[in-house]
Image 1 (cartoon, rainbow, N blue to C red):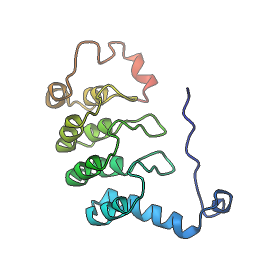
Image 2: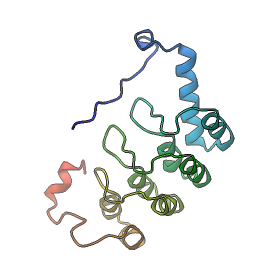
Image 3: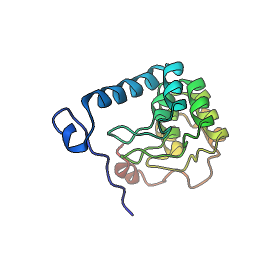
Length: 161
């Protein structure tokens, strides 16, 4: 079943979603806080009852924002609170693939320890390691096996490379 992309919420169409502008501003502040590693603010909001797997207009979660920015402690705390390390965004990208690409190796290890699947999404974390020239550093960690990387270079065209 195809996923339905998240709507892009703007000041102009916010009324049709029934959300006040202040709510949208708060959501933006929260996602920026996750990307900036503001652990106290992000966790206080989650602990107050906001869904830990909340997504933005691109389908990115707070965990994805924190992982891509190499905020290992925030990643650990979000996972403790139930954040899904296998959640894909609206482009089909996995959190672990982004962390591999951004060279956030400690985050990669935390994600793997908490059940992240390195074969999930497009491209997979293993494919990202290969295309980024990180085979030596990441293949063992990710558990790469024969066949995890397409042999036909034309396949990479379908992955956006």
